[in-house]
Length: 483
Image 1 (tube, one colour):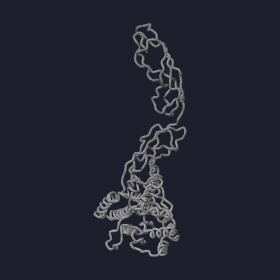
Image 2 (cartoon, rainbow, N blue to C red):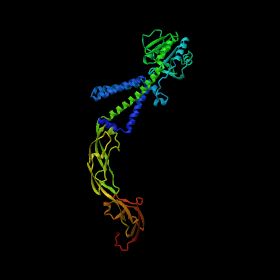
Image 3 (tube, rainbow, N blue to C red):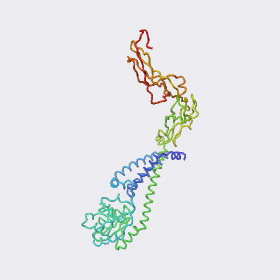
Image 4 (tube, rainbow, N blue to C red):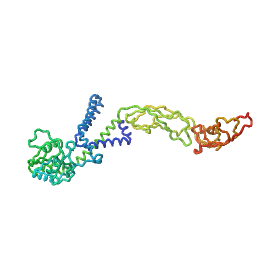
């Protein structure tokens, strides 16, 4: 339980985004493939994955290996066997429907219009095949067809199956009060016990009724007889009132309202299952095998007094050995592990600072095994200002017979800021070396200050240049030295 609390409390915003994104992807897959054989195979694969996880946790090596193999084969089966269904989903032209559209439940279907249309088709002996989808989708069972999206009316339905209409072959699909598709090819039934007078339309209607929960209405072209196929059953309709009663029982307003509620509950349940499944998957990865890792973390010196400055430290890093679940350890960022030392009570000179576990900050779920060093020696000093004389630094030798009679630096003095111990014995600030080898006459040279101690700084940071004015003369006595 403690591990679970540590993992949850240590979740980053990236983890929440990760879980929500994958959950939405799973939910969209369910919405897109809902009612097809693909979603059933995916659910079986998920069940096999759960069994494999349980077997792995129980140490059943062969069972977990077998489940892994079956899952791999099942994934290939989805791609190969159901490629037409997958292709049909991926060919959706409307980006909204593909990414975030939610399919609406079939609204109330005007039963009276269908009954009147069937009666007129029967009277005129016009063959017809009408499909009324229920809860299950038809994508995995039907083929071809033309997108129609016409409003349902008796005249429209009769004209679709008129002999001279190019789309009269095949089935018409009615959803709500619209004819969505025409000239659709239905799967033929392979049953051998069907009546001999059943033609292609009847076998197609039975084939679809065997695979889905759709209602399929057939009007025979030869006899004008009307048949209703539903759940592997065939109803021969001799009276339009009987047909209307059967359709009302399955397409009534009450059924529609119930269907809408069931539809909303189903989608909500799918969303919650997707969220819980991905969250469980994330937790299983986060609470996986524990590993050890080494980290070198720089020391952060905190709460320095304004006039105090760090002159040096025996160590600027702390070596840590940490442990935790592999995904958590690998996700640790540079700014998530810190070592902080409080410098508020330090004094000028050496200060021995102990490093305790309280000084080391780790992300939740990560444990500290060991660290070194356990203490560091930090040399502190008080920052002061001191005015130093500027002294030119010469290098090399002048040509034979020449001497420097005078030299002057501008500025002659500078204000330097630094530690009191460093400035205690310093009275002069030298310039960078100025070579004498090429100097033959009086002039000036521009150079800069040589701050040989890194903790010394000029008070005026913008004036690091110094100009040296010098005079060159001939030696009056050959025995004179340059210096």
